[in-house]
Amino acid sequence: MFRRSIFILFVVLNTFAYQPAHSQDKYRVYLGTYTDKGSKGIYQCELNLKDGSLSAASLAGETSSPSFLAFHPNKKFVYAVNESDAMISAFSVDAKTGNLTFLNSKPSQGGAPCHLVVDSTGKNVLAANYTGGSCISIPIEADGKLSSTSSFQQHQGLKKNGHSIHLDKANKFALCCDLGLDKVIIYSFDANKGSLAPHGAFDTPKGTGPRHFAWSPDGKSAYINGESNLTIIACDYDAQTGMLKQRQVLSTLPNDGERKGGSTAETVVHPSGKFVYVSNRDPYNSIAIFSIDPSSGELKSVGHQSAGIKTPRNFAIEPTGQFMLVANQSGGNVIVFRINPATGELTPTDSSVKVASPVCVRFMGIN
Image (cartoon, rainbow, N blue to C red; front, side, top):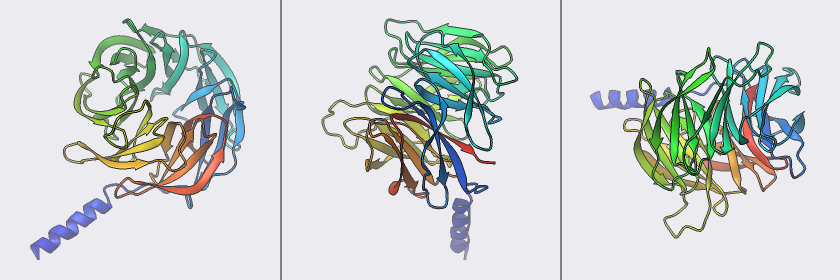
């Protein structure tokens, strides 16, 4: 009888460990692109959660190479890097149609801005500049427009490539991955002042080329993908000190055979916190899947999915955790996978949408 009770308790706890929200049947999907091969800017479509289908994509806002997008917390504004023009642009969102109206743009203060975030207070946009290795903070005005840069930080070293910037859950520290320096550079952040101040650094293994970064839902763990050596680094994060500690390094390659070039692009943690995914670009063209041990935090390779994938850049999981959308940069489309909630494995669907050179996927609720 005792063993039976324990078994029932175990089933109940696992059932309620992660219950995805189903408050709506559809999500609006915004797609950032490169505009050198037919695209005109930011596109939008709709994802149907009942079957994972996507509507046809339409141009939401015309702008030059918006290779990464970020939403304001109030969902009234969208911000984009204009990678080829070294600018950061602001747009207002029409809640009914999803169309974007250009508000203004500001210089990124560096070359090839490639990643940005909006802090949780909605007061600042933070961006990373790839060329030259730097990061900035730009205040957001009440009407959503961008003000003048309030903080600029130049990375120091022989080869500097700022690839992404991420804020911790407390909004106290900004962590910037620098591929060329093999470091995650850490800044203390003041949202009221919009200021970044040097705080420390986390050294990744030599030759890693840290690119993107994802938090666990509780903010206590971080996962960094190594663009140069095709790895994922699992780290513990101390929210008080703002510092990372390496726990584990695993390969993202489909097998342990001889490597033939390639690079990683994106890291995403499932909303349940049970799985983490990394995209492998040419020639591997796959999504690497890892499970996360709930007690130890250790990663374990689950496998890879490559069906229909061609130069996967950014990819994203919609908030309910049922579907993953992968942007195929050279494939000219965005494809949908269904996620197994027990194993994290990805199953291809027949759903996709054509978009020229898609490189960023972002979800927004539909009122």
